[in-house]
Amino acid sequence: MGKLTELRNELMQDPLFKAGYEERGQLVRFGRMVRAARESQGLTQAGLAQRLSINQSEISRLEKGEGVNGPTFDRIVQFAHALGMKLVMGFANEATVSGSTNRPGEGVTVAERKGALVRFANVKGQRRGRIRSVADTAAADEFEPLWSAF
Image 1 (cartoon, rainbow, N blue to C red):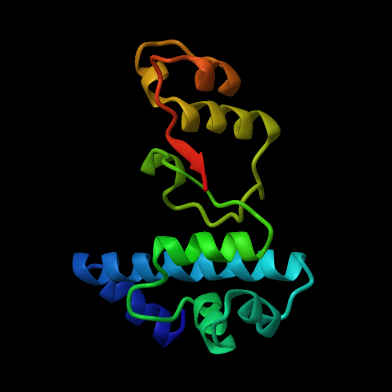
Image 2 (spheres, rainbow, N blue to C red; image 1 turned 60 degrees about the vertical axis):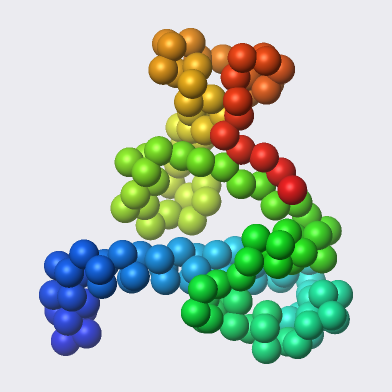
């Protein structure tokens, strides 16, 4: 094991360090998602920056997960729209996603993905022991979906 890995493992014993490290990891993962979306549209950083009327360096910082606090919600929605996409957000049980190193869809079966979507769409229905399809859940007045598109 390398010295940096040993140091990181030692520091991860401190709850404050661990929380900051995990938070930074979320920004890095988000940056990778933005880069993948941009590249899927065949855009350069400069091209996306032009669409958003911002500097290319801001795109670069976002894609690297740099910055003190990360992007605002409004900025994230602007990025999605500039890419011709919608931002989809939701909530999932932390136990379901913690420790996962997979990229979205990697190493997950179709059945697992469908099961996660039902859980994702309706936690309240599960608590009552009723699991419905996502479409049924969205149509039912008594349920509140835990995801939305912007």
